[in-house]
Amino acid sequence: MIRQLYGSRELRRWTLILYWITMFVATHWPDINRYKPEYGWPIPHFDAVMHTTVYAGWAAMWWWFLSAGKRQVSRAAAGWLLAGGVLWAAFDELSQALVAREPAIDDFLCDLCGMLLVVFILSLRQHTRIAIWRKSA
Image 1 (tube, rainbow, N blue to C red):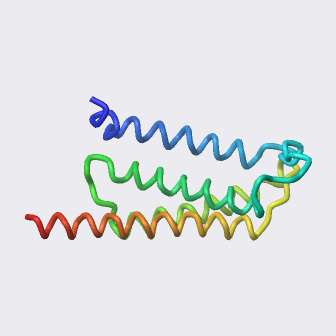
Image 2 (image 1 turned 45 degrees about the vertical axis):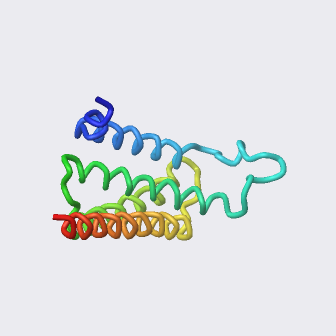
C-alpha cells in the first residue's frame, strides 16, 4: 500500500505544489533576519546553504514527479527542468524586491548550483540503474 501511494502521480503532484508554495513563501518572507539568533546563523554562509538546499529539493521534487510510473526522465526533460529552474530562480530573486528583500546574484547562483547538482546526481543514478537492469536482463 505504501509503495503504491509513493508511486502515485497525484501524491507526487500535490507534494511538488506544496513544496513550491512553501519555497515561495519562505523566500518572500519580509524581514527574515529578525529570526536570526543573536550569535548569528548556526552555520557559516547559512543563506547560501539554504538557497542551494531549497532549490536542490525543488529539482528533486520535479524529478520525482517526472519519473512517476517508473518512467525515465529524458535528457530533454532534464534540460527543460533546468531551464524552468533558471527562469523560476530569476523570478524568485527579482520579485523579492517587492517585499523589501534584496535580490542577490550570489543567491541566484546558489539556486543554480543546487539544481545542477541534483539533476547531475539523479541522472547518474538513473543511468546506473538502467545499466544494471540491462546487464541482468
